[in-house]
Length: 151
Length: 149
Image 1 (tube, rainbow over the protein chains, first blue to last red):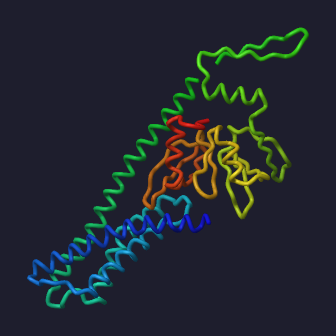
Image 2 (image 1 turned 90 degrees about the vertical axis):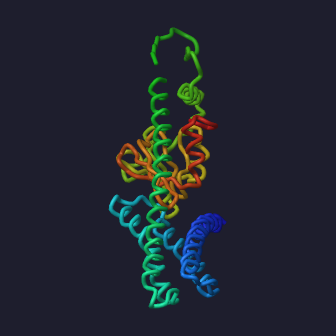
Image 3 (image 1 turned 60 degrees about the horizontal axis):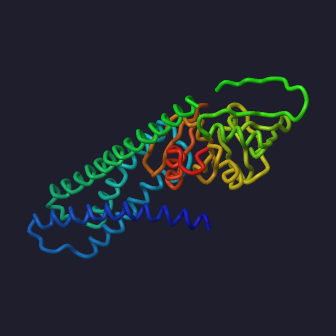
C-alpha cells in the first residue's frame, strides 16, 4: 500500500511538471506557426508534444528518484541533466516527428533555443524558491538551538 | 540550570525542581525521573548497551533491520522503525523518509534541492534526506508545535 501511495505522489508531481512543459511547448509551437501564417497545427504533432512533455517530466523526476544524499558533484551533474536532457529530447522528437520543414531551419532553431531557455529559467525559478525555503528552515533551526541554549 | 544536591538523613529520597516555566527540557527531565522516558537498548559486536537519546543521531532501516546510529557506532535495535517514530515523537525525533527517523537536535543545517527533497546535514557531517512528505511535520517541530520534544 505504501508503495502505491508513493507512486501516486510521484505521479502527481510528474504530471504537474508535465502540464507546464506541454503548455509551454504547445503554446510556443502554435505561436511560431501563427507567426509563419500557418493557421492550424496538426493533431499528431500536438499528441507527440503531449507525450514528450510527460516523458520529459519523468526523465527529470528519475534523476532524483532515490532517497539518498548525493555528493556535490553528483548533484551538479543531475542539475545539468535536469536542464539539458528535456531540450535534447525535444530536438530528437522534433526531428523524428518532422515538426518543421527543412526550409524553415531558423524557426526550428528559435523553437528549440527557447525551449532550452525555458528549462534553464524553470531551474532558476525553482532554485530561488528552494533558496527561500532553505533560509526559512535554517532560521527555524537556529531559533530552536538558541532556545535550547537559553534553557 | 543550577543543580544542587544534598545528602538526606532518613526517609524517602526526594527531587525538588524549582522552575519559572515548564520548558520541554524540564518536561523531559520529569519524564526521565518518573521513568516514562523510553529506554533504547542496542547491540553491536561489543555487546549490548543502553543508549542515551541525545547520543542517537538517527534510526535507519537496512534490509529489514533497524540500527540506531551514534557519532561513532551503530547498534542494532529490536523494534521497527514505526515504533521508534511513535515512541520518540516527543523527544525531538521525527520520520524524515521511509528508512530514517532522525534526531532534530543533531541537524546543523538543511538545503532544499531539486526533486522535492531536503538535504539535512548532521553534526557528524553525515547527510540525511528529508522527503517532501515529511517537511510539514519537520516545520511544525521546529516551530515548537505539537510533540515538539
